Image (cartoon, rainbow, N blue to C red; front, side):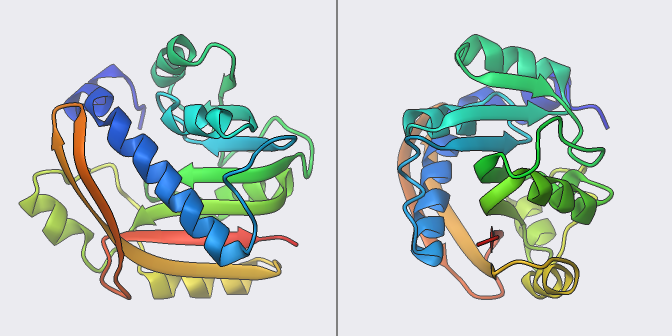
Amino acid sequence: MQFEKRYFEDFEYSQRERLIKRYVLEVLRWGSRISNSNLLNGHGKRALDVGCAYGYAVYVLESLGYNSYGIDISKYSIKQAKKKIPTADLAVCSVQEGLPFKNRVFDLITCFEVLEHLTNPLQAIRNMCGSCRNTMIFTTPNKVVEKPIKKILRDFDKTHINVRTPQEWKKCLHENLQCSAVKVESFFDANLRVKDKLLFFKSLKIPYFGLDIRILIKKQ
């Protein structure tokens, strides 16, 4: 599946910029609490956003002081990202096939709403793990509730080919990765938008039935 112009236009991606940036900050705050480290202070650190699309998360990471990088499989989205954040290092790359970085080069790797699009998300996580020396954060839809709720909201994405439950993610990661900590929690992020304006945002932890799964992996 090539995620090019039509895909992003169909989901009105550019109108979600403020929502996505707020969401990224909220997930990083959660990660800071869970990992007992300040992920909101990136000064002197490197961060990579995998599946960066238009670069909204890369922008947030850069604003927090990180030396920020972004990769995406979509040539179109990387082109858009370079227009918005010309100072960031951005590249077209498939995370499932491997990353063009040295081992343990990043302090933080983020991956927002990408794993569900992949045929082999575990291999992608292993590739990211090799390039990370500290913390990785992923978000992905919850299989338990995604399809019925998204269809009601008319926001269901048919390219989601690998959606799992929180329990399935816990089992998979504990069995296949050797890390000091793995945390999996589910949330519901309520928001109110009018086109590109974000009027309200509230993140609620809802065990098992939250629409969004957050995963934190700490290597040390």
